[in-house]
Length: 513
Image (cartoon, rainbow, N blue to C red; front, side, top):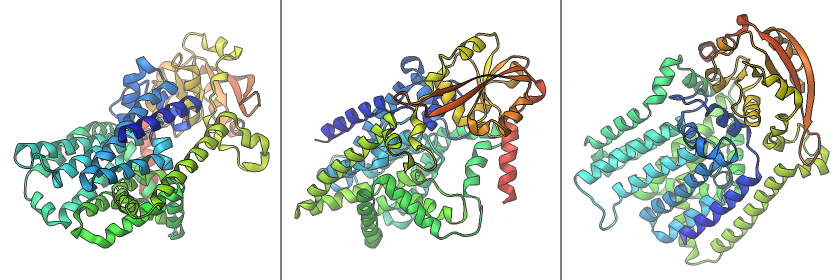
């Protein structure tokens, strides 16, 4: 039955991936994945390495989602096996269903080209090995070398999680909390295996450390600045963070998960199986709940991997309730119906924009589903093709997120560079000096026509207007891009967006707070 559930939801995700255009972060990731590096400015490299490895086969469009969909099928099985080891097969089915009924996991982390998919796969693989190590079932190897190899695998999985996202360190904190707070855990701390596992994790994540050391620790500074004090204390921000997490998980999933966590807290270390799940989840939940009180507002998806480890506990609670009541089955049916309704509404709105077209005042600050509209219609315009045929021609964008869209539309035929003080991963894609003296296609959104274009104009001998590209969904004109020809890229402007300058800027802001 577990395999059938996984297969059914995988088919649903394949259909969804075919209908939805690339998101902003996806287009950006696909753009910088053309260039293989030890690590990258925004995130560690694992998800980008995956895209690059499959690029020759799948390309850099929607098909690039396929490995991530398959990875999540493996994630679902790992959660099932973890829960089965801790609480039995019936609880495992309920946990598997919970995972696939939750909004963020079943829609975003399961199929989009994001670091979250590899992260949760690796964390669950580490958690599964922990469960088999700490709570061996009959027939499991319990002594000697097999247990040491299990620790080494745990270290490898945690290291691979660290190659996906920095927050993998919170899993390590949770594991340390469990080992310190339980007698069996403290006995393990008197043995070398956990420490060797930590060395394996550090060795696995070493590409990130090497890249940061070579780039003035720019990525660590960028991510660390988000937790630095940015304003006075705002206790209400913790409530806003919780509400955001509730929306992402969906309220009918979030509330039972929170209740399951509360029961694990009350049970304490004496209930070691629930305590393990609680310890692995608690650091992430707490950190991303309290950080917004003094730092920048935390994005609600940052805490999602932490909630994942409460799903086995929730699965056990649902299995116990289902033995005596009908409401868990009713809850499952209603949750599935609501999920499909919400999912279908979002997909149809993103694909056609019918909500904004029917009720124009619905989105006062702009239709957010426009972020999923492809810029492919930019490519065939005559000024684009004419200018980009010139030897040495390149494309200029003013923002990293727009550059991802442009690369998706034009492919890897010409260099796409970002001339700004925040180029993100585009700072390391093409050496600016090699572009000096060549002409460029400059692509500008209407809001950047004044200050932005004036700043970029200083990088060229002159800037000539070409045309305005307008396109959208179903023939509607929803997006407007102004195209200019930059003649003679200036050598005095060739250093804009260099990584060392960006890193120093990030460090200066961090230290100044």
